[in-house]
Image 1 (cartoon, rainbow, N blue to C red):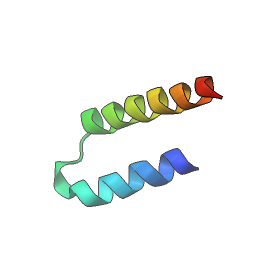
Image 2 (spheres, rainbow, N blue to C red):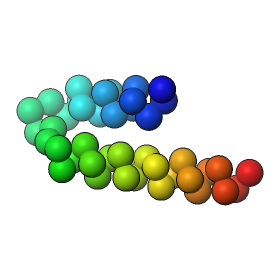
Image 3 (cartoon, helix red, strand yellow):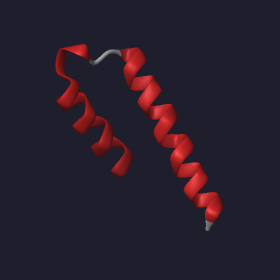
Length: 41
């Protein structure tokens, strides 16, 4: 839920510059951060 909300917020902010490549990059970045946080706990 948080991941999708964040991606939709970024997509809205970026507007016409949003692309599949940018979406994938943000998904990978979010997943890496979430994994790091989970490992810390």
